[in-house]
Length: 440
Image 1: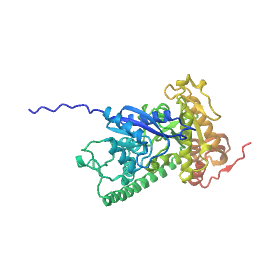
Image 2: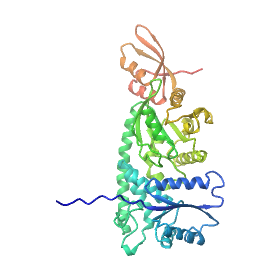
Image 3: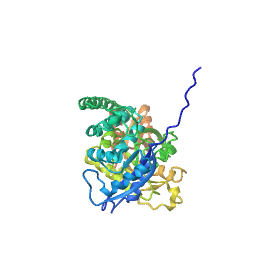
Image 4: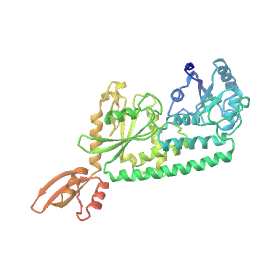
């Protein structure tokens, strides 16, 4: 009988994380130390063992290597002394810079875009997510089809940067790569059409959509699980959730909404990924209410808020999101337990302090959602024949009946409805006109 070989634990790849910082780059907003800490978190989230971190101030960006000669020499010595297998550079590198750094240090070099692409590639679960990650990878690597590591007779490539000689090889022939890109785009278009049909079907379900957005690791998934009872993956880890997840949620008033958990935003999100995760961004664009979840205990919370607002602003400029989105946004200040409770959290008007971990403040959030929905509803009067039970049931299920007076032939109702529900009612019951009332 043959003995099965013992499984040996794979040793983690040793990594160095560096932040090239121009003198004025961090004068306003995010501090260099916080940016470096975020880069370390990104690298650690895909299993790298960080053995060295450093901030390298730049007087000027060198076209060949980005870093100065002395800085590169110092880093090379550290790489060799610590047996570093990959250097993560928290900046966007040109193909030439990446190639020159690898040649000088004798190890793999991954820039910020490549690192985030690796994370997305490891975490995407849905069909569209997987296709979008592959498309983003190929578009990113198309300009990096350079022959390296010739002593191993291998090509740079695959959909990850950390594999060894046995990793999947990207097509060396650029024509074949372009053919693959064309095929991927066609497949994505088909998946998007399918998603469009699903969204169209969901619009027929008269429940408002509430989308959770926020900086990565702000606690969106933990909040999602707490208030819906779902089992979405939630972990103290950057980009723990990459695909949109939706669940029904019943508010204290009895109203029902659809809650959507989305991918976390991050500073300097690569443009390839904004396009690649169009599915997630579409969930935000379709939302009736946006919950902007913030990690209020994070020292860089204010800068993270600006990053999220910047991405949403870019979506507005691109026509993906309407300009009125700030009017339907509620700011949720999460992780209040780390500051001593919700009462200790400074807040602006309209924001709600909560702790998704302990549940403190969640009733206030539910009431804020209810109040927001009430403000968004319009008041109508309608007369329904006493025999029309279907119309009466529809209004009770999808609206809020404020007053009812009955006579022998008709029911006289005053109801609150969302504009979209008013349109649905008119389409379904064209013989029963709704009269808009002025609220005083």
